[in-house]
Image (cartoon, rainbow, N blue to C red):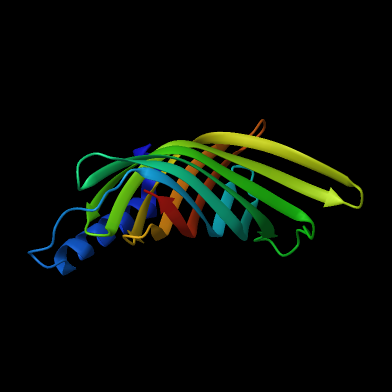
Length: 192
């Protein structure tokens, strides 16, 4: 999974280092609370296929997780995420006016907490469904693979949270593979 990480892991490490430098020395390493979380927001991805096709996509995303507090400063979060996005091919000669892509993530995330701020890394199973619609007809292909990512976020004492997440995965279809990278911004609520 480490080879899938790339720029996402570098960004996560930089965010952790910056926060550690900015957090006052007397800050408590605490605030992880157990409970269900539900959020929604925005997702943007890029895909590079082994056959040369490249695309970018953007759309809406949802997340469902259950946070399990491990003491005050650590938690693990089994999570499920899904997004529906409109596709824009990188090659201007390729027409794709009715192309969409769906991305799903089933993963386990580990988080470190500094007061209400958290940093996490996750790994799991990523899926991609590409759909082309022409009039009343549509065709879809599905692929899946392993991947991982990092997240930084803030969760208020009342349960409202905001999180910025980066991901990278290798998706395998029947006849080609895709290198997938993306970002998600979620706002949600955790029942504690």
